[in-house]
Image (cartoon, rainbow, N blue to C red):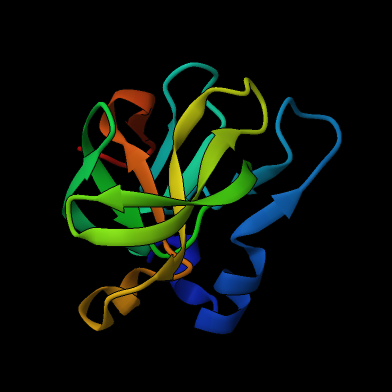
Length: 134
């Protein structure tokens, strides 16, 4: 059996993000999981398990919606009229190379879009599949 599967789910979740100062970026996602990384500097961005949808449109092309991300900084929120209506969003950027990756949904003004609040859009052009994709 794979070593990651022998541990309890709570133990695996608590160890998914490991902080270290010896590496280039701050958070490392567990090596037992498929993950997405910044295409520009290879900083870990998100676990595949946190992917909500592949059917999103970023400002420059296709994008994925994630429940949570790491190694990402957040700019100030601003109101933008997007394809699905008015939202308050904040641009997100890679904390390692400072590339703008997408945005975080801070507030949705239409009831049908409330599920996006607190979620993150990362454009496909800024991330790669990393670790465990066969």
